[in-house]
Length: 391
Ligand SMILES: Cc1cc2nc3c(=O)[nH]c(=O)nc-3n(C[C@H](O)[C@H](O)[C@H](O)COP(=O)(O)OP(=O)(O)OC[C@H]3O[C@@H](n4cnc5c(N)ncnc54)[C@H](O)[C@@H]3O)c2cc1C
Image (cartoon, rainbow, N blue to C red; front, side, top):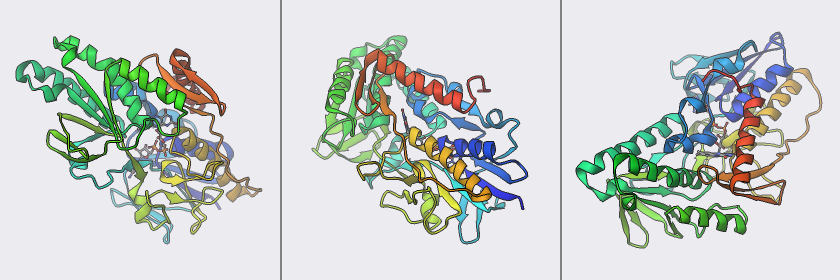
């Protein structure tokens, strides 16, 4: 009998899973339904460029229809309301109910606010194309208002968090803010860009030499780092620091933490304290083997026994693996435990600059690292058949 596979989320993990499962399973063997709240696949790894205005939002949105064309994958634009594993069903925002034989949960992550007062209410976050557009238009409006209002807080920008996405955003802004100042006829010496981080350093997990190079490059472009300084509160127009200092600003972007998707917690899957689901070596829920939980929604351990950081690279590898596991569930065969193959990590620092480590220990800097990062993006687009897809 034909099996019903329902995939929630058409991000890196969900899309790759749908494509891989369909490559292996014929439409007579499995019906594949892909649910996503937008009609497009988002290139989240480039959101910081759009937020700073360095890349159009159209270029990082790819129509899902064009990616699954001719592949017999049913796409439904809908928001998942709840997952009910005991009933083997999901409820969508239009209250329709979808039953499944196999479920893939790939709904990504949410911002972690660590209970900091006012942060959720007064900070932007950078997790979707729409949020990136909002940040870009807000920053542009700050420059447009400054000549009339002369309020220094309009030209003071605070990025909370110095992890991967925070540093990438800081790098883009370090290049873009002087340009915006020039366009607005504002002296760029009035522009201040802060990166505030509770941990003692930036880019956790990166080698010291790479961290030093990143810091030097960004400081050289005027970035003011405040590391080891937790934000304790954000009130309208003011960031309050644990040191007792305050920063008056109209722009706070919070990149300081991610947690698993709330729908996964609400469904009753076992999660770790950050809300990411525990999965077995085949990426299945240990309590519901017909459910695969992938990407930022779940956590897997690396070689050193510590949880791997949530990345697009890991998400698409999980998606591909789960596509194969679904084939084996339906057609039989021996499953091989999921082994992530982390090829490296490259953080961009603005246009034409980056730092990173590839092939376990080979360090890259500057333009070469930047080009390697661009190349990895092109490889991803080729993998999902998006080189010439509609945007
Ligand atoms: C600014 C930034 C830069 C980054 N740079 C890198 C990088 O250089 N390299 C790297 O490896 N990683 C990077 N990351 C991390 C990486 O983007 C994530 O780890 C990756 O997107 C996770 O993939 P995913 O498939 O789990 O989730 P996502 O890509 O977030 O996909 C989840 C999908 O589910 C959909 N969805 C969510 N909720 C619902 C719902 N209720 N109903 C229906 N659909 C829903 C979303 O619209 C989305 O399409 C970066 C992240 C950010 C924010």
